[in-house]
Image 1 (cartoon, rainbow, N blue to C red):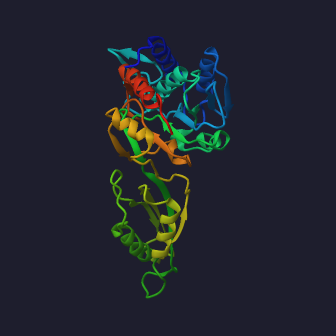
Image 2: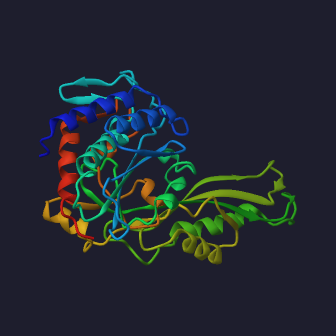
Image 3: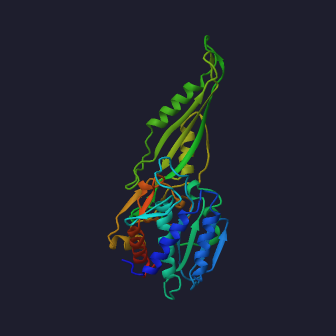
Amino acid sequence: MFTNKTIIEESIQLLSQLIATESLSRKEDKTADLIQYFFEKKGVKTERINNNIIARSKKWTAEQPTILLNSHHDTVKPASGYTKDPFNPEITNGILYGLGSNDAGGSLVALIATFLHLHKQPNLGYNLIFVASAEEEISGPNGIAAVRDKIAPIDLGIIGEPTQMRMAIAEKGLMVIDGEAIGKSGHAAREEGINAIYIALKDIDWIQNHEFEKVSEVLGKTKMTVSQIQAGTQHNVVPDSCKFVIDIRTNEEYENEKVFNFLQKNIQSNLKARSFRLNSSKIGLDHPIVRRGLALGRPYYGSPTLSDQALLPFTTIKIGCGKSERSHTADEFIYLKEIEEGVGIYLALLDGLVL
């Protein structure tokens, strides 16, 4: 267990300040101010890009590999059903309540504490860079996507999200596709027109029944779900258009764009992907940090939820304080001991790590 109580106490104080400061996605400027000021009080120089705060280790050499520590400081809107003030950081029986405490404030401050403990050490064997990112909850363009090219090259990213300090060695990707079946209008009472709904039904049936060959050991199948459909103007007109939406969750065996191209070849409807950005990610069991985690008794799994991992083109692992099931729920909370234990595990993973 990490024994520097001062860093732990200061981290919890920072998290309390963050909870008390509204930081909905795209409106994180005040929490960015808090994080930047916290680092400056510690004598750590920072760089700010939009509402992303960047700090680098003191001993930096181009010959060494670089490790990124990243978590986010934006939140979703408070869920309905709160019995407590979501912006009041209330501590009761070792539990800290408040919006963003679990997702991902606990991981954020634990990584800050980890960075502060390591950043001045002369013989780390790697460069260390910390990024508190914005717009994670919406995968926005002014979040980690606006930073990644400016901090490259990165050899390994550690992404702080609530995983109970289990190692998420893979994360499902997301692609949303708008489909439209095109027919020809006509009068429903006569044998005329081409019914776009019937075209769409055939395509939807193919989507429902197709199974991708490659099944992931940790993420399972790549899954396609038609989640919305819209067609028709009145009862006696054969519709010439039927629109539908496909939600696709890719495992690490498939890239979003390749799935899209395969899908378009196999159905008649016209398809348009809203984005190809949110690909699945993976890290091998033989990677040094995974081997270190296994040696420490940390279990691994595949994560069904998205994070900034999806926007990063280099090797990453997701591991953090708290429990995913608490995220986005009313009366969100984190145990204070989870933060302290998280710092200890982060340091154990990084101590003497050789990439």
